[in-house]
Image 1 (cartoon, rainbow, N blue to C red):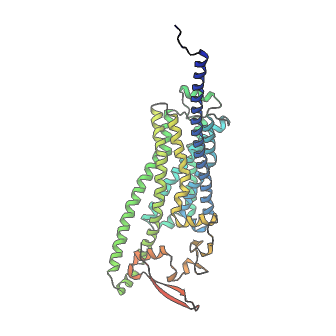
Image 2 (spheres, rainbow, N blue to C red):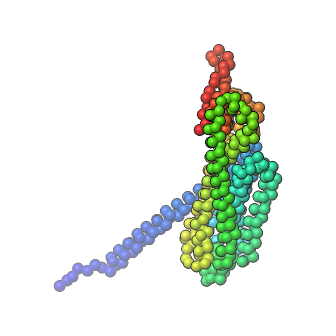
Image 3 (cartoon, rainbow, N blue to C red):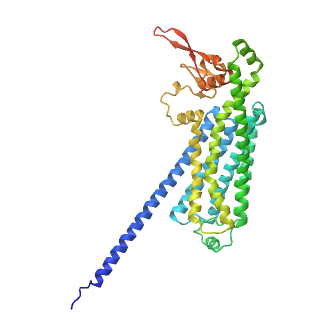
Length: 414
């Protein structure tokens, strides 16, 4: 009795066809993932480099942005720019090709620059928190306590300390681990992985990240408590002013000019405080998971290479977020639009440039502007300090005959 059997060569051909099709599917999947990874890394690179160049250019071009606090913002932008120019491209090459093509010295330099930029960033954010604390608690003495020269010296100290905690130990080899994987990587010129020993992993994380983070959180907590307390006092003062008649209001203004100046300064600082708080929060969310894993892996070695790379790139992406966060500031938005030539008619924009405002087809100095030419933020601050009764301003309009007319407008504080 004959039985129908399938020839061997047909089975082999079928198996080869199935295996080749599955291999193509795996290659297609890995190719798709690789394309997505390359697109993400390229996006982070372009966003970081162009965004921080835009920030630094805005600081250098517009005098109004050249404040003491913005000296620290410039330092933060420089750290992010170095991260974008040196750390991110070589890190992307190492992750995409799976091998290091640039030699042992550049591997150590690239690793040290990575640590240096992160340390300089967290140190700068720590200094910014102290700067905001001084601005909120001592607004009248703040400008004399912290000048631009002192701010530049502080920035220099931050970068020197960051260099001592990064380049010195890494080029001296204090970080090297004695594990099998670490020794294999050290003997392979095409390997550039950061296998650290437990002592360097814990100590460097504490010095470079955790101590500045704790100081920053503590100081910023005090700043927000003080900000809420002073805002409550200002609101109480507004209610007291609104219940007074006009004569009493004028006498109170004469006797409390110092308090009004303090309140107006505080309101302006409170707006900047929110933006800087967002910057610190985003930085912490991006880098905290990486440093937690760094300490855990140093104390208890485990195979977390992929997790390290993912968390590391989440930290890199923080360098591209900051220029976007700065857009909360009207001054930064105006500077961005001017640099990118996005203002179709920049002279019709009532924004402030170098202490002057273009209003009604003429440049006016902020210090010589009339009562009716106050911008919205100044009016709102004055309304909040003096009360609603003093929120009337006069504006000029031109009738069809070409005559100037004064128009009374009522502005409410938002």
